[in-house]
Length: 128
Image (cartoon, rainbow, N blue to C red):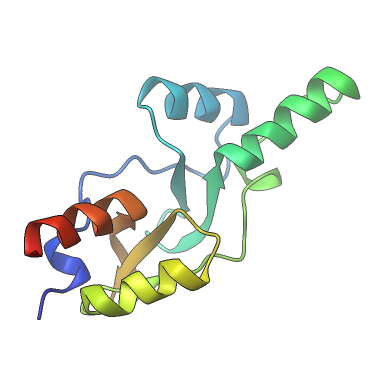
């Protein structure tokens, strides 16, 4: 059975929690990413900065005049993850039940990739 490991993206753009959130937003836009994992110095997953989080930055800075700060102030901290050995069918079910567009993929507690809805649909089409 095909697993997440077979279809996940392994060339990741990762962000630091102390990184300037505007710089992180530019990086997401330039690389056409809908989000990126936020890791500490040891590679532990702290959260994900998503386009939705970036909209919060845009709203607060333009409407309320708040100064943009760091990624850690805006990132989503409650992150749904999947194990690298989860089957394709299991991850399809997870996406079906979740509003998330991507899941960080973990192996031994460390981020080893990302799996997106697009990755899963591409894998499904390759299998049929």
